[in-house]
Amino acid sequence: MKVRVRRKPVSDMNVVPYIDVMLVLLIIFMVTAPMLVQGVRVDVPKVNSAPLTIDEKNQHLIIALTADGQALIERGDEEPAKVADSGITSYVTGILDSDPGLQVLLRADQNVLYGRVMGVMSSLQAAGMDSVGLITEAPDE
Figure 1 (cartoon, rainbow, N blue to C red):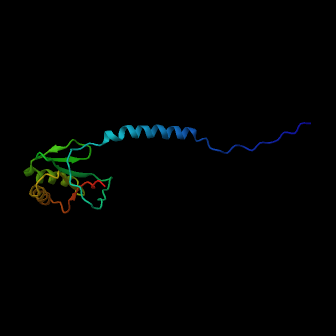
Figure 2 (cartoon, helix red, strand yellow; figure 1 turned 180 degrees about the horizontal axis):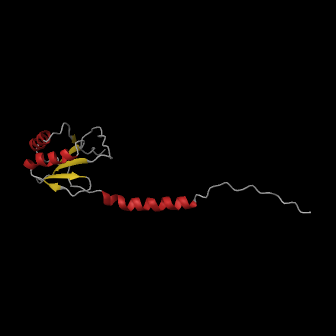
Figure 3 (cartoon, rainbow, N blue to C red; figure 1 turned 180 degrees about the vertical axis):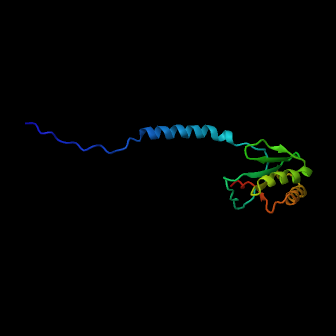
């Protein structure tokens, strides 16, 4: 007489399909991540400072002052809009009326005169901004 030996059921999870999915997602993110970065080329001063905490859930407004004298306003995924220094107040006031919790950041080329940066900050204050963050780059070690 032959006795049948009962085998225990296999309780191991097959993770091979999960690894395949993760590798595909990794490749997709590696290909699309460089395409998501857009902006205006500005050589900002390099200083030692603590990083700002930016809430990625909320929109933020970046005002960029380029070396050739242009003022550009970047908001989310929209194309940067060229604005004259005199029009910054009205432009930002219109945006702040629709989104009062908007965070404003100022990025200026290192060759832009200090007086111009202060003029833009004065325009932002006139538009109702209480605080403005300044964007810099960390110095190369």
